[in-house]
Length: 258
Image (cartoon, rainbow, N blue to C red; front, side, top):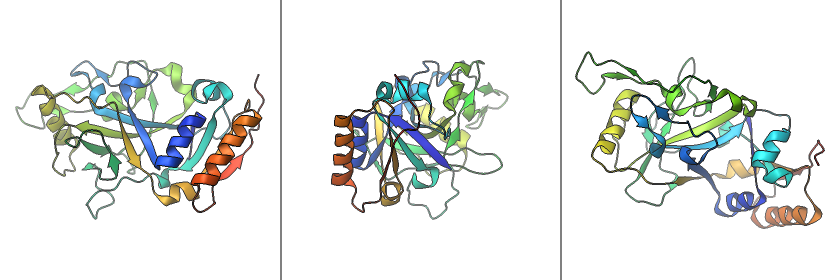
């Protein structure tokens, strides 16, 4: 599926030079209510996301909010070019520790979260709702699976005022120590929460996913509507320096902005 990311020229430079995609902690995104729950309080320290949009037409609000007020770029890629690597031979294993990340703390581990349902996707279509993010409790048993967790309510819901974004997001969950390989979400999350109860809070503000060559070979960059000649020169220079296979395409914007 085609996806689009509005950003600044400076961020584009870092993506091309470092060959990484930054996942920011949700505490730093625009909806302050994300990952807030009635049952567990704030889950923001554990949730990291890379946010895109599925909207193929250019968006003036997105250019203004994320594209440096119309002086940035729009990156076009595909969900199939965002890879999460681990040691498993199973491509459908839902919860595993991601190996292709650059992290600040060597003790940290990051778990790739998949969207389940009729099909398994390694990305989420963001749900928009003004209902509080609530985990449904079931205290009838005293076991590690005593809670029925609603993943989308906690990690993939934004207020309806943000619905114009048509957001696609990739999600990593962070933890202070290794989580054994597991295909049961409830067990995985219980293990993460058990670490927080021991006061070993997770303090990373971001993690960088290492991108592979297919991401760059299929990359398209749309220049912003208000871009000037100097900014065009910078973008062209970045492409010439870091596009190893000379396949990145530069596209002019189709809209006008003042």
